Image (cartoon, rainbow, N blue to C red; front, side, top):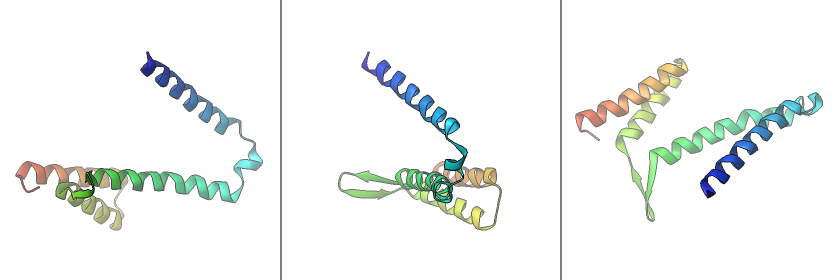
Length: 105
């Protein structure tokens, strides 16, 4: 039962957050600081997610996943070459999967 309460509370919170964004006054949305913040937050969250997934912790030490780091390198290379986002994702996934399939990582 506790899981359902948490699920409903989270869904309600997400709905209210979405509603708050839609109900915000225009003068608040035109604030340059808020626009910079809204641009930076998704980038920071994505960087944190990539870091957490690429480097795993084993107790007190970090473990290095070679296949994931190679995939991350392929994604960075594709971004440096100004590839479309879908190409970046496919390059990272293919590199990671290829190294694991070959048993190199």
